[in-house]
Length: 282
Image (cartoon, one colour):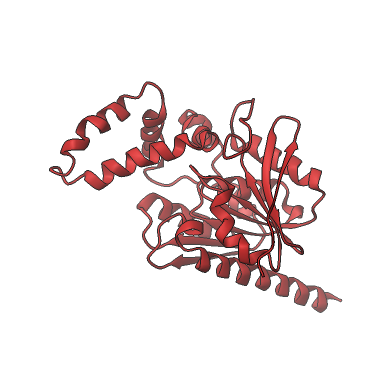
């Protein structure tokens, strides 16, 4: 039977945060991706909340959460998450994040390792791969105001089919609209200069992420998201990586049943290994 979902707000020191909550048991915290809010996870949480205590956060500037009054950064979002979890007095948690939410989740685990049991990261952002700088600068030009890139895309859109670029142009325009519905994640990913963005990438820190980690990605993702998933799996020591067939990067919406099964199997596996480890050392 599905658990009812409660909706709550909390005033933190620098941000007014909204979240959804359901279920009891071991706590799983869900962090949404770029252009999304916590509702991205509802189809996944409906079943998982039968076994777990699920917390679904709207990141600052996204969904029902207020804009962050300070300067957006991964470190600032990490500290907001830490303050939120401290206020709720939850114990050790599992973190599940998508894209920029995965970046925040990994950064939180690196900083507060003792509070994390394991992580599931879906198409994670937050590592350097070839082409990332060019993509970040292109998207930054697309979302700024005024935007020559946006003007140019609208100008060529009627002729894009003739150039064989209709899908690509429409995808960029839709992606811009999506990001504007989630200004917090837009600021985190594309509202900052490359040097500041680059300084928060996790390539050097991931070898210290000594917690079980599962990477999920769809088989239809583009080159940069695929490369980022592979870098996470190569650098973090306790990593498994899985590909969901016939799906893109937004697995919580595109393949919720497969996503929740992977999360459930992962958490059960980690819990069993920890029990066995404790038994063996007693």
